[in-house]
Image 1 (cartoon, rainbow, N blue to C red):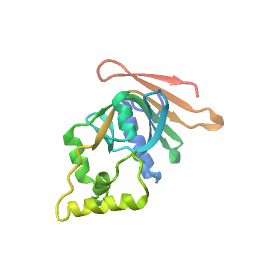
Image 2: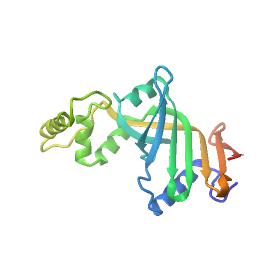
Image 3: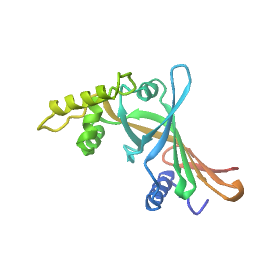
Image 4: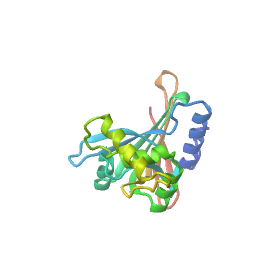
Length: 197
């Protein structure tokens, strides 16, 4: 086992994440989410990691977005973190499920008010005429919730990825990197294997 790794892959993720934060990593919470559409075409985009929620790697989105429809139809997904400041990468493969209403409400309530308004205003992944339309929609939401808390829209909430595999990559000189795969076993245990770079 490498000195930078723990027996528990979640613990390693937490340690690397904190180290990247301390190193001043730009957008340390950015992770790539890969899905497939109905025809099997792969699609990837950056989402924001919001920690471990209900035992899963969490992020939040519009449930009517393209990625949400793709995950609802085919929940097997992949996530990738790249910590350039540390020359490290983490890959996760697993199954995406919607988080509980309670978890979505808690996170939504923690967001800045303007971000809450944005969740209502954006018909994510749908065509719009121009930016002016988006700004008009946001203003209408501001008026609707003037003097009141912004409620979480039912079409917006969290997903969590239940990992079946973690891969930890540590950059080495002359491309002689260190790679370790954690494969889920029964219960809470993981089988660890070193891979050639």
